[in-house]
Picture (cartoon, each protein chain N blue to C red):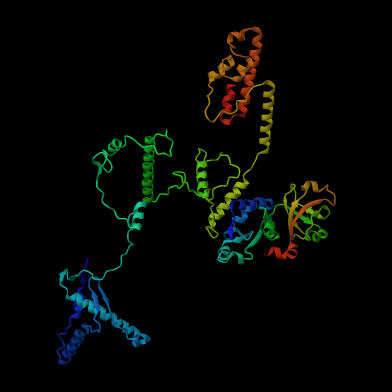
Length: 181
Length: 407
C-alpha cells in the first residue's frame, strides 16, 4: 500500500472530475476527519486515515480491500473507475440520467442506454460527459458516458445509443470475483 | 568537590539524650543498655570484609547472599534492607574516621581520591584520518626511516641535497647529456620527455595531496574524469560520459543522443517517495494543490484562434508586399535599433537588408527626389511601415506598444 504519485493523482482526479466536477474537493476536504487515496495491488482506495494507518501494519499481499475501492490502474497506465465508487459518485454527481422501468434490467446486464429506455435526462449535458444512471425510483444503477448531448437526445431515434455503459450494480453479481480481489 | 557534609542533627542523633528529671536507676540502666546496643550496631561484621571506596562513596559487598532469607517473600525485604544498612554504616564509619572540619555548624570531610576506575562517559575520540600512504604503511608495517639530507654524488664528486635548494641545479649539471634508447624514435627530445614525466609526477602527487585533504575533511571526490584510468569499468565510463555531457551551460539539455546510448544509472534525479503513513494534513494539501492545477483553465481557444488568424494574415501580406518579420531579436544580443536607425531606414540609409536588396545601394535623399524614383521610395516607405507593423504583432508584448507608436 502506498500513496498515489503525482501523475496517478492527476489521473484519478481527472476521471473523478469527469463525473462530479468540482466536487472532487469535497472528497478531500471533509469535516469528519482526514481521508486519503491509497494504492494497493493496482487498486485505488479511498480510506479514512485512521483506518489506513491500521491497515498499514499488515503486509500488502494480505490486504484484500480497505475503505472504498474507487477503481484500478490499468496495465496501460490509465485509471478505470469501478462500480464500487458509485456510492460517492452519485452523492456529488451533476449529470444524471433516469431510465424507464423496462430498460433497467437491460442496463444492469451491461448494455448501453438507448433512447427508447430513457425516461429523463438532466439539462445541458454535453457530449461525452460522465453521467450517473438512475432507476425510475431514483436508485443509482451505474454510470456511463453520454453519446449525445442532452439537447440532441430529444430528436434521436429510439434505437440510438444515448449513454455508453461503463459500470452498473449488476457487476456485483457478474464480476464478484474481480471486484473483491 | 569531595567535601561531604554531615548535618548537625545527624551528629546529635548518635549522642544519647538524657532526661535529667528521671533519676531512677532503672532508667539509667535502660539508657546505658540502649547506648551499648547502639554502639554495638555501629560495628559491621562480615565474613569477607566490605570493599569501600570512600572517594566514590561506594561500598561493595562480596559476601554470599543467604538464599533462604532472600527467597522468602516475608524476610527478603528485611534482609536486603539490613544488607544496605550494613553497607551504609560501614561507609559512614569510614567517613567519620577521616579528618573533618566544621563550617557554620556543619561538619565537612574531605574525601580521598576515588580508587575505583569508572568507565568513560563519552566514546574515545577518533584519531586523525590517515593519508593513503600512512594507512598502507601501517598495514605493511613500514616504519619511517631517517634519511640523510645530502647524498654523495659520484659524477659531481660532491654532496648534493636530496631535495630542495640546489637539487635542481645539480641535476642540470649532471644530466647535460642523455642517452637515446634503442627502441624509441631517435628524433624525440629526451630532455623534454624527462621534464614532461617529472611534471606529471608532480601533478599526480598534488592530486593525491588534495585527495588526502578531501578525505580528512570528508569531501566526496569524483572518481571519474579527473585522472581517468586505463582500467575503467563500463559503469565508470558511463558515468564519465554522463558528467561530460552535463558539463554545458544548459546542463546537457540540448546534447544529442548517440544511437544505442545507455544512460548512466543512478545519476539522474532521485524519485521522492511519499510515506504511506505520513502527515495526513500535508497529503491533503498536496492533493488540493493538484486539484487547483487541474481547475486552472488550459488553452484559451478563442485567443489562440485569433492569434493564429492574425499571424496568417500578417504572413500573407508580407508575402504579397515583401519584407521581413522583425519579430524576435536574438538572445545573443544583436544590435539594438534606436530611433535614428528607423529614421535612417526611412531616409534610405539603414542597414536593412530589404533596403539593400530591393532598392539597391546608394539610395539617398537626392536620388529619392528624382520623379520616377520618388514613387518607388514612397512604396518602400509603406513596405517598411507594414513590416514594422508585422514585427510588433509577433514581438513580445512589452515591446509591442512601443514599436507600434514608432511605426
